[in-house]
Length: 368
Image (cartoon, rainbow, N blue to C red; front, side, top):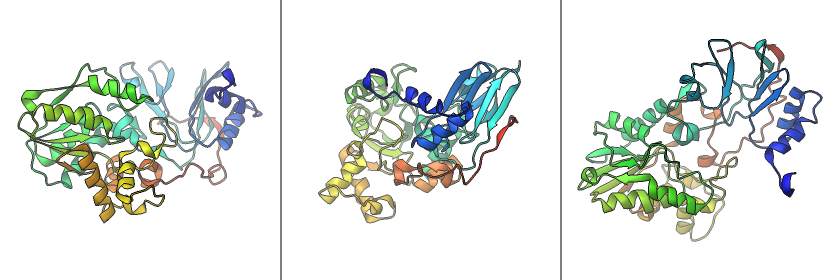
């Protein structure tokens, strides 16, 4: 492959080229890879769009007033360009966009494993996945956090930007006022979680948020965030700024359960050593353990001790995570249609789907 390394795009192209037809090649690709790859391919007869069999990430077709089509993962990209949502591709579905319009080349499957983190953190608030809007999910998530809470505070806030929707939902349910003690340096400032290098993440985290001392000083704050991954940024930057600005108390409310397993399909968390929840378990047990089932149950004593350890590590007044059942209910999809690997360790990526739900080939595609 290129430069002696493995380039995923080249690898995908070589596997597709082994098929008798383009559609057969894409099927062969999905038979051979263990992972997630949604594809756009341009040929002389049109553009082919294929969503990976597990539906790990979304793929949506938009239609313009003139009958033209676009394809994206984010439905929000359609709105200002005058496109409407024409079709959410099903897992494994292949369509062609050409002169004849939108044509199905291979039907999709009913099985799905879309990443739950899309709604909790990575997704854009104006986007919808599987027909479910991100911002509304975050508001419902915040309501669940508030329903399970009895903390006394002066106001609720969200860590910009992805924590804001959760905080608004918390405020609506609890009756606490929503305020902005932390504002972004500029609205377009990048995410501090996604850069692969820790020094870059630290730099972004340092510059991204500016505290409003006049709002913070002397107050008890419920701070909603999308998640706590490594714990380094919220401790060294967000919480430090709140403490230095005179916060009386800070109560952290992450919108998802403790992350206990690295994502098997992304690069942001590559090992368990990066996860603060795993560091807590190692500290409590005195060594690394493989069986962590007791720490997955939010009713167990070990779970309680793990959360207490993380709270001490972060130096916060209280810490209470979202329950996984509440997170799933906030999203609104059946649990079996979500990838929850980061929280549960469940692995459905090796499921055989080709024979259990045989695909149907070629036909006029109905927009929906």
